[in-house]
Amino acid sequence: IPPVAVVHELYSMSWTTDILALTTALGSAKLLHKGGARMEPKYYEDLPVGATFTGGSRTITNDDLATFLSLSGTKNPKFRDRKTAEGTEFGKIICPGVMTITLTMGLTDNVFGNEWQSVALLGFERVSFLKPVTPGDTICVELEVAAKRETKRPDRGHVLFKSFTRNQHGEVVLEMVR
Image (cartoon, rainbow, N blue to C red):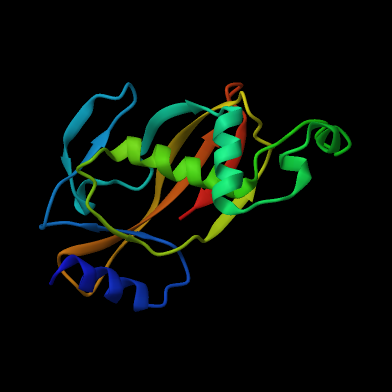
């Protein structure tokens, strides 16, 4: 089956939880362990529930925020104007939550590298914004294999990940189940 057909098929299924579908026999999914060293190729069968993996980190700049606001068309002054932001409960400019999600997804790619054989991200079960993220913050991501289930197709399996995005103080700023 060509990859486009697989993605279409997976997206057309209705699941109540989000799940990353990993190939098993059709390719490698090399993972990184803490410290960034490559592990041996991993497949669905090799991802035990409870396993954790860490990604890289990224310091968010004012230019990152400006670029995201421009691309997304976000006009809310609390993300752009220092004076307006000072009058909010946060007292300073913050990043939109969807920007934190986007950066988290990018850092997730660092966990699995270029060999990641995910077929599709099918959705999110839960997204919780726990603390604001501001320009100057450095975020990093930790993934936990929360659950797995086999599918009718023998070359596929669904993996449910719980991700924790932390700031430079180790505080969880975003938690997602996907």
